[in-house]
Image (cartoon, rainbow, N blue to C red; front, side, top):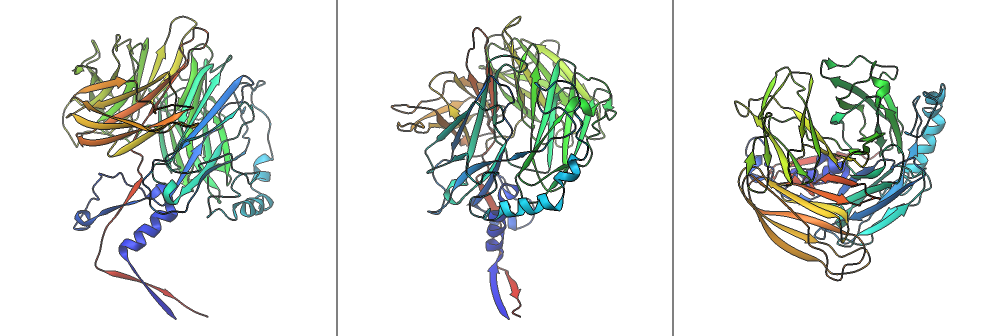
Length: 542
């Protein structure tokens, strides 16, 4: 019998390395409870997982990817790479371009879940502990980082471009960021659609979705792991939980290393303009994002909103926004009464006629704030009208329009988590990038750093101060001798809570195409409680 003694801290670090982002904690978050909270140390994450959704099925779409990891991770060896995920068709159209309604795919589910397929996936996953080699159908990476601190890019015009999954380990893991940006020249969803690839999880909220006739919203469920995930989809409207449509939305199987797109309009018995989607994994974990396409207003990706909270911030509404529609959902058993504020350049103001908002429990409340920014970039700040910590939590997102008439374009800004220490946006370019920083309570001092370009250049940093109750929107620094795209890293040096977003713009024949990505903390460290007690692991030899 061999007896191996491990400290509790070592066990925690080992678990963090195995579970990746599921075990991460923001750098300044305290571990709640007891003496262990005081002794907690923050260690760099050793393994991270990301999921990028299938970009588009349009024949006139061009998609670019940019990947980046800031310097500072520990260890000398490691890798970061993304691999294609297999598309698994459901009984619904697979893209906005598919016509003819629901496709008959009877028997497909049994085939996908056969033991033969599972054997195939198991073989593909061998070697997955070393950078997930084999996790893609071809076994070759689509996008791989060469070194921390240097961005890499890739492009595709393939209408069958797949979803991507992958991992980063060693010095590549802390803060690994991938930006996916698609330009669509015509048709439903035309304009600029962008998203930051996300970490897999077991629960997601999507306020601001729709099953209306003029919208085609798909939720993309992508499984990065070697075992199947089972997912439930629930849709809520202004009267509560919507009656299930033909798609039902229960017990959707997402096979290993695969992606399943589901058309939201199949989940409700009738079209509903404003809904909140809840994605819950019964088993396993998935990455989830909603792609919204409008026939007249373009489209964009709707990322998941931060967890329910009585206080929320939606950062980075552009100064020339022509319309802002706020959607709020109260998932608990209590109604929520909220104060609505706009944090602009000079402080907090209340939108005329919309100073407060009453949200009934279990129901979606939507309000049209019109052009509330009036030429000044800002951020929406929601807080309890009365009470504090005991106020019910809500989830929220805003649909933002730019332009007029038939030259309007859409983007979405969900409520996001704050930047406790650091956040990164990849895929910035020399023109058309705006960074928005919001300090809703006290002021904050922030360092903003531009990485080298994907084709050369040197990093450049600047320090900015964000005054209390304001939003500071500005063009971020560009690398010296800039060539290609680059990443922007935001570090909170001191002060109160900080929220951030990055806007990309690319005018297309008079269309003000744009996309907004919120920047929560990159969660590059894990809290490891220290303990004097040793844990013994017994291994039997036979």
